[in-house]
Length: 219
Ligand code: HEC
Image (cartoon, rainbow, N blue to C red; front, top):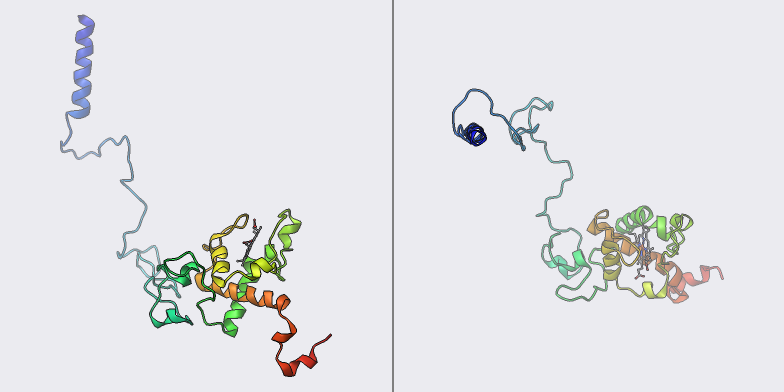
């Protein structure tokens, strides 16, 4: 009984001590067992702050920032009849005819000299390490142990529609990883256009050369 009384008193003191003063006012800071995220070293938006030289807590947008509500520019085909946005289920974003699993035959952007040059530059950065500058699959990674890199001159791959190449760059295929996160949509289509030029460099026949220039070819 003596032990019971002692234990009971202790329990009452503990419970009253822990729970009894809830809601009570005090000038002292409360004991915090779990501080959660009550205090954070952060700046509230749109308030004055002397951390930055211009005295604002918020930063201005980086020059060249593209709003989500900006439609694509330079679309060449039927899609250009209306504004097309980056978040839409549209061929320019997926490489597929909307509502089907069929790939589009031709890229949606107007193919111009600067577009091709952009494509070559991006190809050299993102594809050449594995597929090589020639597209034959003998890039530097082959020497480092990547055994089977596809040759882009493989007739099977040369027959792919533009949309399928776009889809492969975006989502990867088999051993090749996806590059959607690294390469913008327009740049991916520019790479597709450049890959077409690479393929033509090997698959073209003499009939593709204009008649009056044929005599200048080396035999
Ligand atoms: C890290 C190395 C690597 C990079 C970078 C890379 N690829 Fe590949 N790619 C591969 C490998 C490996 C394969 C063969 C995949 C397989 O069949 O398993 C492949 C296959 C392909 C194929 C053929 C797919 C098929 O159906 O057989 C195409 C087309 C292709 N790549 C295009 C590109 C383009 C365009 C780029 C640049 C945006 C690129 N790749 C960047 C490694 C790479």
